[in-house]
Length: 208
Image (tube, rainbow, N blue to C red; front, top):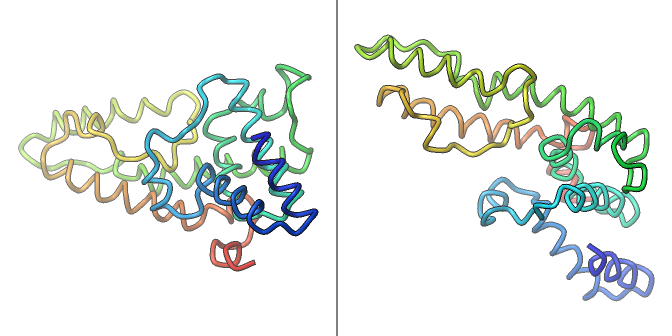
């Protein structure tokens, strides 16, 4: 992040377009602006150290505000909701860590609530379907167990990709339908992602 910041600062201050472009390209790789770009990343390059994750996401939001890069904000805010705890977002654990502005904290909290409400209807709506096949007992029981994944407090998993364990215990027909519904739901969430955080639509962000 330090190298990216330096390139942005130099590129912006001295109108060095190559430096700025390199920095923006790196940021839009780490904070994708399309669902295709997100899904094409290999084991999304988050640093596993929790403190580094806090620095990276909060630092990205600060850079976006400072250097007019609103297009990276949807995924940066989503990342805060997905990777960080409420305590980390509100800087309750370590006062020496980077921190969000009060306004950005509010944006994260409101966005998190909107995401968990919409993910239940869009990405994970299939968890509430009822199987009527010959294997309905096993299939419905499996679905009930999967719903416990979000208990007791729903996690922000709105853009989680479909994974093989999700279909364990589901009949073939339900498994196929669930995967299709899951991926369609992810797209709905992605398309609305900026608006969950009070931002303009993707088309406006990418044509600023």
